[in-house]
Amino acid sequence: MFEGQPKGLYALALANTGERFGYYTMLAIFTLFLQAKFGFSATVTSNIFAGFLALVYFLPVVGGILADKFGFGKMVTSGIVVMFLGYICLAIPTGNNAVGIAAMIGSLFLIALGTGLFKGNLQVMVGNLYDDPKYEAKRDTAFSIFYMAINIGALFAPTAAEKITDWYMKGHNYVYNGDIPALAHQYLDGSLSGEAMSKFVSLASSQGVGTDAASLTNFANDYINVLSSSYHMGFAVACVSLIVSMLIYVLGRKTFKHADVNNNTKQTSGADETAHVQELTPAETKSRVVALCLVFAVVIFFWMAFHQNGLTLTFFARDYTAATATGLTRIGFDVWNLVLIAIMVYGIFAIFQSKKAKGKLISIVVTLAALALMCYNYSGMEETISILPQKFQQFNPFFVVALTPVSMAVFGYLANRGKEPSAPRKIGIGMFIAAVGFMIMVWGSIGLPVPDDLASTTTDYKVTPNLLISTYLVLTFAELFLSPMGISFVSKVAPPKFKGLMMGGWFAATAVGNYLVSIIGMLWGGLPLWVLWGILVVLCVISAVFIFSIMKRLEKVC
Image (tube, one colour):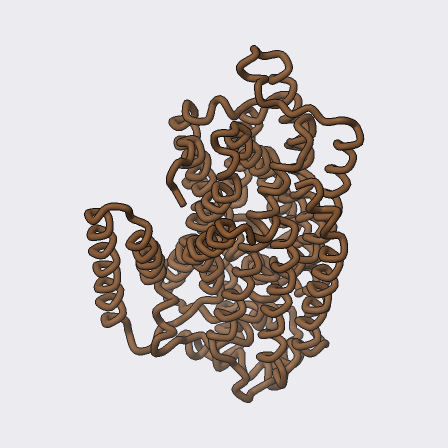
């Protein structure tokens, strides 16, 4: 898996890990922040969230065009600086008035612009490392490692966000409850009555607050302000992570400097640097661009479904999922347990892959030590632990990290027998798997009240946390089939003079899918939940059928 890879891969991957840690810390609490601070409805929240994600993944098109002209490295460095400014602005507490909203939107634009300059161009540089025939056969493996590094950063992000929220709230003598922010906003605007008012009074009393009108008003304002401030502190984490990312990038530059080359540079450089430039006829160029555009059209619907994790799946975690965990389920809500499980997975693979007895022995010791530490940690956990909704977002990156060696072993086994699916075929399989993931949500949501009725619902309707965990597991399988393979496919098939643009096109397709995320968010309210998830199932199945219908055309350019 790691053997024979160029050193530049690890420097670029670690630089991305730092940036992704900050980004996913912000994203874990972003929709919760919008509703808690500003009292936005699900529709408004969905549009802001989807619009931001769309910009994040569309602006790499601009970044790619600039990189094709000025160089990938310059754009990556500029992107880190611009992102840093955006996160600083977002971390500064503001009011929940029009000025606060404007400041928030401006911050989001800076973050999206910086990401557009950074993200796609860093990945093009990874691909450039494998233009050398010496490494060409390791391209898919490299992008799986790179993708895993992204998710190592994302794995710790929800815990960082949760710890900051929990610490800050406790410092103000409050305990987080996902029902309070919406009820507090409704109380302040005078729209709370009946069962909803009784529920708010009960929740305020549980926080040690009096039940008279003045006390409730003070509580509503103070709770909103304290919770919003805790989220601002969470955004500041991204500033620190970007400093680390920049240091890794600068210190490791010598290992990937040769990959910081675009087509214009190749054409004006010496013979050694042009030795591997591939010349294409206009017809071949057109064929490749068309094939890539067809793949882009398919993945739109994957990202529309997958990125519900930061929107409707987070709503589901907050409103429909039990806020506590018991038994073995507790293991997954401690990030260090997840790290130890990942170490055990890699240790087991190392036992079988090590060529020397010493290597096997070390792998066995590491695996057993990780198992012992996890058992010790588990034995010390409380019988019942509290769960914040953002914590569920750690399961997807954990599954990516833990399952990457499994997927690579399977693909390696098939490759050795000449049966490994092509990258387009893997993408099609991934779409079918995504449909299965949302079928789990369809099954688990049957009989649940619609979101608009929650404020007045007094019966126990909360589902087990294992429902969301299972969904994230299946969606991760889909992601491993689709995302790293898609990026690898683009880096391999894109015409040399359009590499930056085509990688930007991949992100543009992701941008469209991310904006379509808002459709499900806007439907969140009066429709049964199983209908919403069913829409995503149908779209994923249709996309899978389409990509298999054009498979011969796609595989022709591989």
